[in-house]
Image 1 (tube, one colour):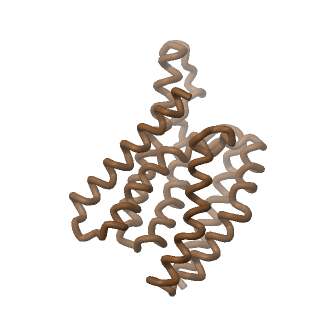
Image 2: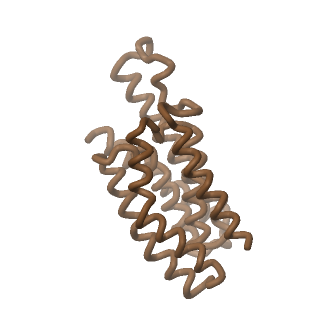
Length: 204
């Protein structure tokens, strides 16, 4: 529970920092766009734990995706109907198949604790931010989510080092590994296909 609270506080700090930075450096952003950047930073700090169905971070992330599945198409319907088909397709996938597919892959050995996962999943967060608040927030949302994600991995390593001693921490145990553990290629493949399809539809 202490570890989860540490991640929660770190995620909140990144979210607040990302929102404040966006508000200061991008004054042209509307309030909802700044909020999307802040939420991206917060979600990014929780994402590494979606490989643990029993964690609080997993439950929060899953709840947020279910809310997004309702909110994003509503926004598209009223403000950017040209992206409505894309947002509905994404929402249906998130509600119907994403979590079960993710569980199947993770149960076969994949892990979300890696730098490549941080990049791939942060791109997914940026995509949802784009659908919510427009293209201007895509890059800030990606940076915010990626920062939160990498901070989570760093905190995992620091806590493991504190518990085991720096000299007892094997290199392979690092959460900041570039590739990941187990059959991570399956997870990356699914994410890559989804992003390619999404950006292809985006360009139509």
